[in-house]
Image (tube, rainbow over all chains, first blue to last red; front, side, top):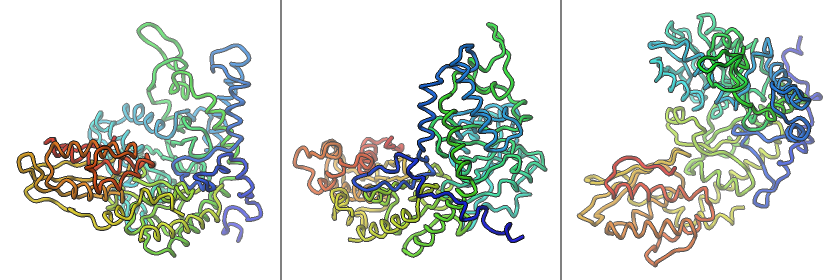
Length: 420
Length: 148
């Protein structure tokens, strides 16, 4: 019985994190004469050799267009591309492979839903419910849609110093005008992990369609779209060891089936006349033109790599690094850390008294530590919190406790340098 | 650890960023413009009180990094009493120095502490933000300008 109470993975089964750093060629770089400490993983993650090899292998062994050739290479390319779709479907536990639409990433996935499902289903007076902690990518597409349809936006409040969603009045927020609830699974600024299943099941009970922005969570923690119960989920490949320019939209098949196409072109049609055309079934209906075939193949390699490590173990390591950072950074004093005190993802945003985030980031860079400084595409949240910018350290499984210690040492030195 | 940053964060720059001169709203200003850096959310508003073609008084307010704040502080100190054409020449000379590290003319004075910024391309916009706002304020365009 006690087994269920412990962390999802037994320590002896956790991968040797330090050893697998050698899978990532870039991690042995020197930056400004110092070993690179890469702590900007919420912006993008580094790529293991398995992913780089998959890209090269595709272009050397399988390159051709998909779905149209009869020749051998085209068959190989189609197998790689459709195989990647199966891998992605398994990765998020979709009911069927056809529920995965390849896109350029989470942003395009959200725009797809706004322009198809949203444009067809929403009208004046309807409400699109978001949260106050959304990335611009989960705000702006809805603003554009609202301007076209007359729907309006509402925002679930973020409360308290810990930056959690206030769910005490969720029931009142889910009014009959609300047609869509779209929220981030993990905040890229606060590190907050939102209770996706709870939000989706409450929305679903009221017939509200749900979209989860999983850009920060997909490769970082176990994720099951059936367990979450969402209608849509948006993911980016490059934030989970895959290449840039490839990601996917999960869409519950009954939703995808009711959506019109958005981009017209080759590969998405059944037949074309000069004046009218008919479409393929989902997901192909939403993939016009030659897709990012090599990117999809390499994304599949990334997902397989992550599952060899095990997502429960990755989540536990992310969380342990964040907890270590919180503890060590609190000891520095004169530092304000945003977000929850516990249970956070591997994201730590902070402000140093009297030193602007950009100065912190420039100086950390000179010590070989890559941080992000700015508003993190989270301007409305920053305004609400009354701040312009923060410095942010964000972790992934290849980061080590020693790197966190080095970060803290560098922050101490920055304070000393600035008070000279 | 940060010796190679001494060109960027000169003592004068740190001093001005900690205690900026001419900071705050300028009552009776007859020109003003806001500069924004959309990349980082920083913003600075420059106020000028013109007496004909002469800058009778100048102040700024806003938020930004040490470079942006110090640049605005040193700029306002340098421009008080200057004419519009003199300010334009200083803008050009400062801009060139920030881009190349070389100062043309001998009128830059204290502004030359920013010469080291040219080694840090990502920070050039921080130093130029207040100057773009100034140019807009002097031209009578009261709409915000951005670094992008």
